[in-house]
Length: 135
Image (cartoon, rainbow, N blue to C red; front, side, top):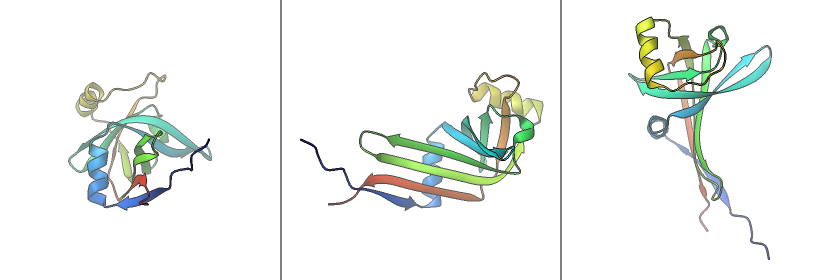
């Protein structure tokens, strides 16, 4: 006997709620273009002073002028959760003291010489809650 699939829906959340969801998480994905291909790298992040600080295994030279960072929490069994995407100007953190601080507080990945810290100034924040549709 099979059961009918659940009706699911996506509800857009406000920017404030999307930022609240983002602050409660620490793991996401940096998305950028390199050599005409889309590249996705895991990242750790923290929200400080209205900016998103990201540590990702990507070459510093590949950090785009405008970066996209995606965070989500999905429960596969129920098809529920949330998804947030932040886009904005990005800059590589070059100050040695600041970089040292974020290397201590954000766990990184061993990926050769590529261990980049960047600051994203959010210009666009979009978020969605994934939920069951009301019957």
